[in-house]
Image (cartoon, rainbow, N blue to C red; front, side, top):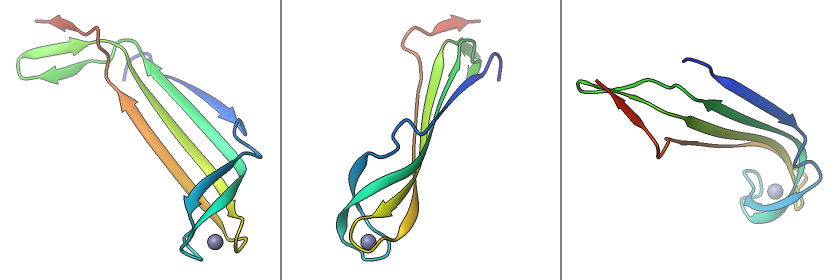
Length: 94
Ligand SMILES: [Zn+2]
């Protein structure tokens, strides 16, 4: 990948709480975020081949990793959320 840049932000969500299902007590509980890592990735010249066409444009990804503790049973687990988006302003290079 050309010009790939990543920005890592530590503990942006630390101390926040979220409602999620617990893998241990299997109920939906309030879970406290103990540690969080947010990774923003961008690339402004991502070549993507589609048949005879090569598309260039900006693409970004956003990955979140969290260590959470269940408010019901104190079980500690890891959560991962990933998303990626293709650009709207793609240029077509023949
Ligand atoms: Zn639990």
